[in-house]
Image (cartoon, rainbow, N blue to C red; front, side, top):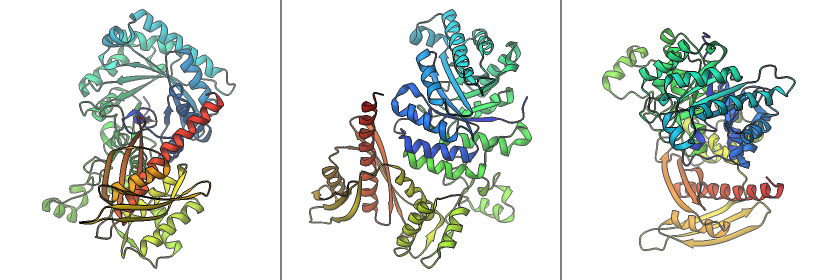
Length: 524
């Protein structure tokens, strides 16, 4: 068996299916770039037949990153799905089609209403079809096709073996064993993988993969049990995003394999120093906050408050720290810069924190840093990271931007917001609104100007660093016509940060509407 585990990231497909985590194409490209830099082997970029947006995202990711990583597209066992997936992947040097079909008794009876024989016939037919489609490209000698028997952990073992054997014969180079509803336990899942290795005669012709969900909180443990039994690919997501309770968390399985390399005796190609910044990027893009005590990437992951722990740490870090914060790219709140810090010092700090910015993006972040330095005496690493993260909003089509902003509030007054917005065409519009507090007034004013009516579904404020003058980060979600959009803004004034984040979410909704119109015009 290989001593290298293939990391298959499905943040852009399974992770995006998590309620409230939808991403537009620009955001998916940003995430894909980060996954490539992280060292992910296979990026499942989406489900092309699901929508024109999904197809476009997979196609662009395949064009831009199909040489650095293998780009994968999901397809049901239907010809139209496979055709659409292959069409999206055409320009990827390294491509994979991932087909799936449920096999468990409960799925056969209630969802598919198909007999075992029909499931085997359909699976074999579609794996072969996907393989044949990929073989039409002259530079592909061995088509890269993955097959997943959905709900494998609840499938009868003899039938599972039969399906796996026949799909490998049909051309599957990877067989993924999903614990689709998070039902398995480590011993159970280890038994399933071991049984396949012992009873499928051609199993050595394919890589065995795991795809574990976290309904019982066992996704990472089950994935590692699969590795113990011989699996050599793990399907996972950043921050454990995914349907219901999510998927196995990439950062946890990677650091478990690295920290306990003495036990598992395998390794990955992941650049672990990119884990923390990539986790933060995913959180910012999706609006799904990482819990403070989350393993590896949580805010408290390397915090030690107990006196006994602190004493041990002062004597020898390894008494209470099995990983070094720097190994995962964790950054605390070290004081780094002030208003007199120069451009070169700032760029050096940005690079030290793991960011690589284009000149124009660096200039915008530096300008924001100078403006912040006039408001704050002390600027921390976490402030700098927040400024860089905030720049990611530039990827969104900004139909409207804030030129001037003023609010009035207090006891005995009517909360009022007066806002001046500039349209991308250059048109400037001013308006005012009242509300139940200055934040509510600002939101209503933004809706009046943009013409978008939204329902606020989530709103949170947190301090980026310490001190009364700390940057406030506002993260919120809105519902527009049944679709969810996320916005984030930072400022030392939380009302201003609220306005920026709400406008960002409104701009996303406007961009989505414009994208739909373009797709309709193209006949997609």
